[in-house]
Length: 117
Image (cartoon, rainbow, N blue to C red; front, side, top):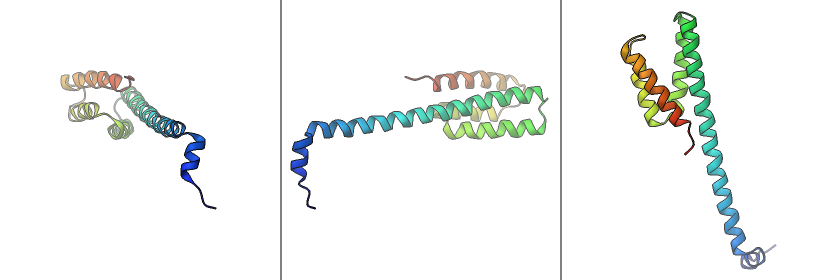
């Protein structure tokens, strides 16, 4: 079977072909953006919940591992701004003024990260 591509383009119309290609590209781009948003949301909420569990469990070993897990997941999907603030947070001493400030700054950046523009 020999296909005449010019005849097919004439039948379907060149505009239809371009519309289909552009539509497919925009849909895949939107899907990727939504997937990244969902991954960030899950990681950030997991980290915030791990912080609460850590405080409720008096900073026991299991809660440290739980927070570490969520910090790592957040690092994998975070924007560069949130990533840098996570590093500052990790390098601070729990309960210190630096940690408290870093926590507030980190939460603010996470909120910005989860805002569609």
